[in-house]
Image (tube, rainbow, N blue to C red; front, side, top):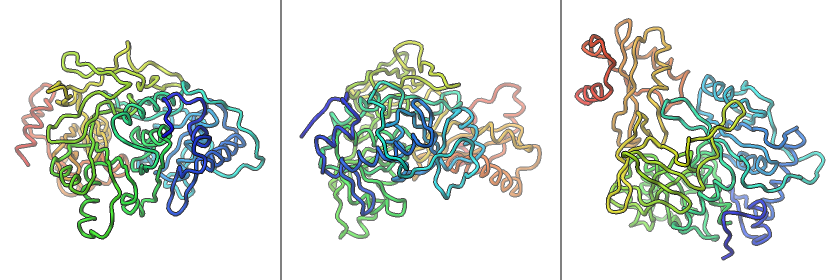
Length: 468
């Protein structure tokens, strides 16, 4: 098997086109593209971007769920030396416009039937070029390539900037431990506006294997036809239940990288019986996705540090550095360092047990629901803008499917009756994406409002547990 370091001499798809020209590189439904065809298609779309005025180092914002078009656009953006940033299309227009204002983007792309047709920016189209020509931009892997939104500990969204080398170093480290051969296939099962989705693409490009893109309606079927996938536990549960209902459906899935929430040992044991090896780990946007990893077991730990990364504990807080660490944060069209020194402070608290990292908890208040990070203060600020809300606190409650779900404890100017709850639900539906919306509302007890001091979240959480 041809092997490369994470430093390619040219664009990765061009490298594999020279090494494995006719090998299948990309599948979308019944369509299959060889590495030579991928290279030709990327150049065509890159030419189209140039015709529309896209220049080197400009920023292209993409507001769309995963699709073959988004993948082509990502690769074409890289090819012309521009920068890609994905935005969650499930966000409200209020959230999207705030993110776009922060980005000061040059171009925007969204599907023809987008739910957000009035977003700002010069709109791009993905079409064949009118006047085919060479794309002059050369491969420079240390330059900024992608930008990814992440929530900081303060709840203010930040934009992490990664180079191709950052991404390829991340891929190389994970694949040094987790087998992914050139005859294997990885399903693009996570969104390209998350670092986890981008990481799948770069593992594909690093290894020269096959990437599978599926329409949402075909996702379950595609999952039975690939060897590798990145999933949250709920998706794996549904796959195993699907196979139990119809054992005649063969599974070729060999390895699953799980994340997003607590992983039940019973689930990974059931998967092993079906021939699926489950992996888990710990990671973050700033570090290009996974930092530690292991084959999932019942220990509750998240494994050891992967190659190309370093990790240390300082007063219990996890600090990281390495070749995968982002170039910095993007703000006002300027790149700012992500940390003051070499080490990035994650604000996660952990400890080593038997040479394995265990995550104790977050130093801030963020929690995870169905694989999505929720920063309570962000949701609270939206609630406080409602005329009937005087105080608002968002806390997580345990949920068997999503791991955790948000609930709101509010102090209101009028009675928190069914009418007001319905009003709040309608208000939040227009303001924040679905997973951030509280699933229920509680009235803030009087003794909290009369204490005369800042409300203790721990005390409030203890009270909430007593109500459940």
